[in-house]
Amino acid sequence: MIKTNSPHAWWLAFRPKTLTGAAAPVILALSAAYGIYGHIDWIPALLCLAFALLMQVDANLVNDYFDCIRGVDTQDRLGPERACSQGWITLSAMRMGIGITTLLACLAGLPLVWWGGWECILVGIACVVFCFLYTTLFSRIAMGDVENALVARYGLSLNDAKVVAQQSGGNWEKAEEQLSVNEEKALYLDLFMQLMRVAYARNIRDMKAWSEQVAALGRERQKRLLDYCQRMIRENFIMNFREDEMVYMSQAERNFSVRFSPFVNERNIFGIMEELSEAQRHIEQNVNAKMVFFDMSLRMIVWIKNR
Image 1 (cartoon, rainbow, N blue to C red):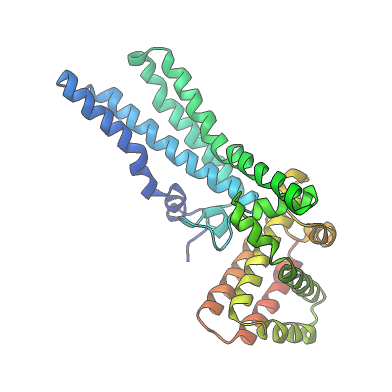
Image 2 (image 1 turned 60 degrees about the vertical axis):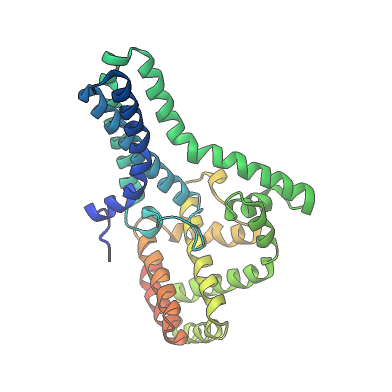
């Protein structure tokens, strides 16, 4: 269990395996400089290395934060686990971390003006700008192309096309796969709404019936249901920010979430997500499904009431 906002959590958020990619160009340039001039000025060299590493960390944190609030981090995504989505780092702490790493990178790079001239300032500004654009804009351009294609080819509404493009991460093949599972997602939405309603009502008998219904779905569909529930919790949390362009839900999902979203906030979102993640782990370990889902629904009472 990783403690929230702990040093270990931050270390994982930094994605240390990516730092070699940031250091490699600097080391290559130092090798070339040594081959040409026969020596290395170590002060600017170390400053360049520090700037490159800090900017890589900054880009990783920015990617982690914005992918979390946009709901991109799903069960089937590739790469290292994301700290915000896993609940290791809170969103407010991540915003502060992004600010600190950006500041430290600028402080490390600013003295390079002494050796490289004012052009270094322009390079530094470009690095910071593209650090943020990498996740916030460039990924949206790819998704925009997929949205337009879905509208033109399949006649989807713009809102539904945005939802499919976002859930597929801008990948056209995955977007087409998403269209083929809409019927299954309607079932998941119905089960999600049932769960939240019986948890709010503290209706133990209906919880037992719900658990038995879900237990009959089969392991793979149970895992997909839990993945869907986690996405819906994230979307409802984001809905509270009143930033409509950041919310990716179908019209049916929005109709339910208008009234449900106030029940998901910073006091309970990580607890709810942890319950869903733990249930998913138990299902993957072939624990008795009726027990897993009944226990999860009981625990959900506490979190839904903690608003």
